[in-house]
Image (cartoon, rainbow over all chains, first blue to last red):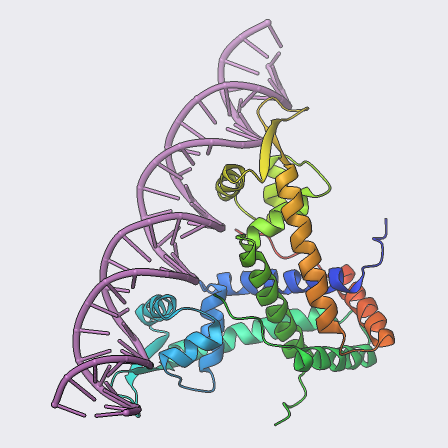
Length: 145
Length: 145
DNA sequence: CCAGTTTAGTTCGTGCCACGAACCAATGCA
DNA sequence: TGCATTGGTTCGTGGCACGAACTAAACTGG
């Protein structure tokens, strides 16, 4: 029984939930939550202060403090003194955290490649281009009050 | 500073997180969490038993029980005796819950229409078709152990 | 039919996660 | 220099998800 064709909004959200579910599964297989995965992802390329990190993740300072505490307790990240502000710490991914993050990335890439394999290469390129335009054109989500 | 073009996996996840964030904001504006929104969305068209609902939402029975308790306490859903199984209850959305769900749907549709407006109509149709093929081709997520 | 097994759903204890309020010390500013 | 602002932590609270334990209804095979 073929499903009826989706309108764009339905399609976007079905895909979004599908991807979130898959990422959640892969993360859970490594004993990580989604938010921990996102944290490690951000730390791949930078060493932000807590406030900057809280902004990226759209969390309050206190929530981030808890998140970093838990990740630190697992040896995935560490707090290092900020080079520019004596009040603050920068957050750095540990070698252990980096290794875990890379393993998850590899698993996710393999998973999504398999998902996308229903599309021929030309359609995949077309899709990537369309997604790119959508994401670049997006306004930031309104601030949480 | 234009961002570099995304590969497909990056594009898919950026869009996914973008949509989740927007939906989370809209839900929060109505004092709902994402999972409550999903619950109400499922109940729009059916009146499942708890086990069926737990399977849709990929939750354990106990988690779902808590979720339904909270939604029930807010007058959004009610438990009704199952017509086919004396042990169980079916879950029905209340008029109040239905109204809230419709409001959220309208807000989401408006939001995503605005997001998609960077694309001309033909590209929107193309995107919907590609998404459809992706979603239809997807294997179910592996079961949680 | 009935005893034993399975099952639908609830409750409890626990931990993760997010929030706001309160707090403290470093930083900024007039 | 005194006061205001700020970066980050702690605390209390509630939502959410899990597994274990439990109970009563449903199922099954002799």
